[in-house]
Length: 158
Image 1 (cartoon, rainbow, N blue to C red):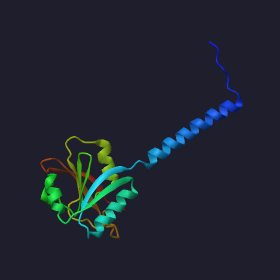
Image 2 (cartoon, rainbow, N blue to C red):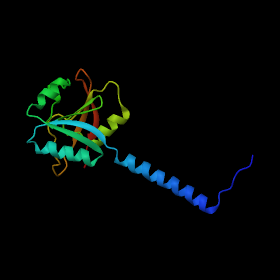
Image 3 (cartoon, rainbow, N blue to C red):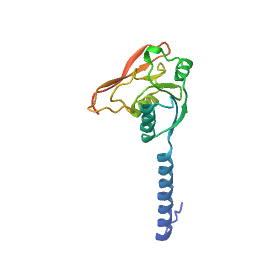
Image 4 (tube, rainbow, N blue to C red):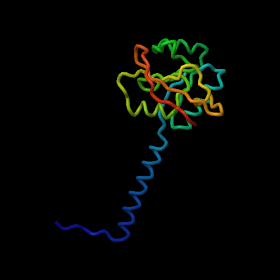
């Protein structure tokens, strides 16, 4: 079987085509952001800050301002003891409160079957969107459909 040899011009042309294709693929994949639906009170500044944190970390939030965020929480089975100031939906999961983008990414990567979502009950001072200094440790919990919680991540330093 005879193989044709490429001359220098053909070889450089082929190489340029491969490089251009790789650049386009990388650019397209770098621009793909993960959609997340966020429900928040229109006057809540810390919720707005959390949305900005999510945008800065590769998410594409669709924000719905509502004066009755609790309706969304109830509709998605959020136990009241786990409530925070805003609720987000991503895939099959509920994200309640100021959960860091890195923990949401980990949840999406691992896709645990028994987990309904993640929460940081209340409003921890140093969680994303709150950003109080000096840093105060906080814990992110996972919860199942019955409201049973487990520690998902502990954030001990900024």
